Image (cartoon, rainbow, N blue to C red; front, side, top):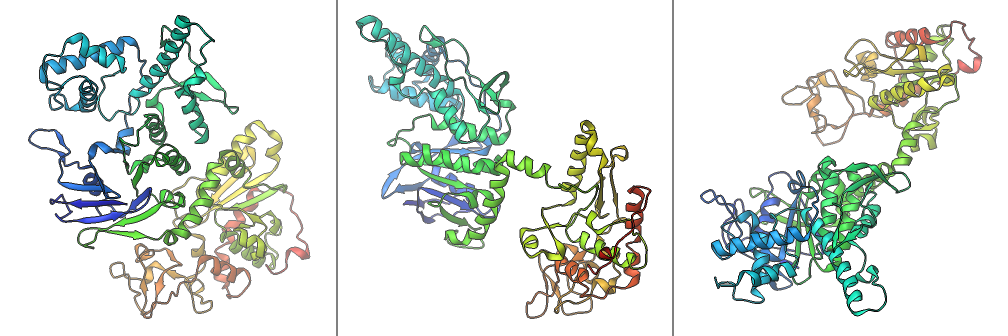
Length: 622
């Protein structure tokens, strides 16, 4: 249990503010400006930068207690996504660096008695030096002998470095491990006995990081062994790209600055985990929007690091987030709180039951499992359209092929476009559509305009080296309501076109009266039916909900959130409209069907010259 008590006004939080947070992993969410980051400042005691001195101050008057025991800012580690934007490269630590660090600390000691205000950017190093020297001398003395001062720091492998640096200390950790190996070997040489076994020191830090990277599916590794000479690594540690077998590609070196922001964030936290934070030292780890740059595929890895290296050490982790992925993929033991703006709530913070996010968790889990399995996802995307037909026609929407097939049936009954067979069309939809064979759906797939365009582009690339694939005619049919430029390559038998006129979705090929046909008391609406400012219907007692309000006054189909006076939705979904058209529930006018003529004229242009007679089975009702 963390108790927070603020004894002075701080930004939007009034003096006297109190709250309690329960759990080992606490996730805070809320809208922008609700005060999440301010709350983190309160916990850390960070007043921010003093405009007069330009220095940060951690003297905010507040009380933080864990299970009744007060802690101060020194017991708290705080990180945000901003810390990862420009992390420094790993440096090679050596005895020379240790000597120069001791020299730097001694100079500050002689100047100011190790006063952190003299060099605030090195306050962490100054504090560490004070603690090390303080174990042997009164740190306020100004007459400590230089050799004694420096030997204490050298003996602790003290390194002088700036604050808030993630990666500098990795070289230090590697150096210390190499030094311990050298000391072990020296002891064997001095006193005899069996050869020194480096494994007796535990797992090497480079191997521990490699194991962590493997768990997180991060495709970088350090070398699994380093040559040690005179108690030091003979080379600077560096990351390498790995191949599909996990083997290092020595030609593919990776600088930390070259990694993505998400990779920097997760690797930085891995580095931080190797600090070996002592339970008596750190009590709370604050991650303030640390996940802001993380791809959802890294979120579960983030939680794995948090649990293994912090929570299991007894350190409470508090996260602020705007990410639905973070909320939905958090482990079962996470506690959830939402933060609210000052004007909305006097309490400001409310605990949320995990069940509130169940639907969010289910949806996100399914999606992120798919994209996390990159090999499977690539295969899924590459094979999203797979057919043995010599001619394949794919529409960008799963409603469009239903409209077009029904229009084809209309023309073929008149003896037109008989060369276009219904089986040419890719009948795809959801798993439920396939299970129920909705309108003859037989393929589980999702196909928006960008996906279809990407498929056409990939198919062109595949046909560049595979001439046999060029025998199949592939035709993409797009709406015209966006600026996307469909991919085509006629010599490869890949064709595509947009419907006419420009700037419409397929539904607008139907005349207005047909679009507005009712099905079980619901219908499609057109944005022009609603006042752009009030979002009220111009002639009926209907209002648009928030998700549809931006379509008011525009020539766009509205198929969701049109409410009557008692709050009932009167909008028909596009899918239900398409099914009603396909099954003949709606009586579509000849004028509407004739608007589809240009689609079949375009398709006919791409088909072989010889016409194919349509059989009776192809003129049945669709």
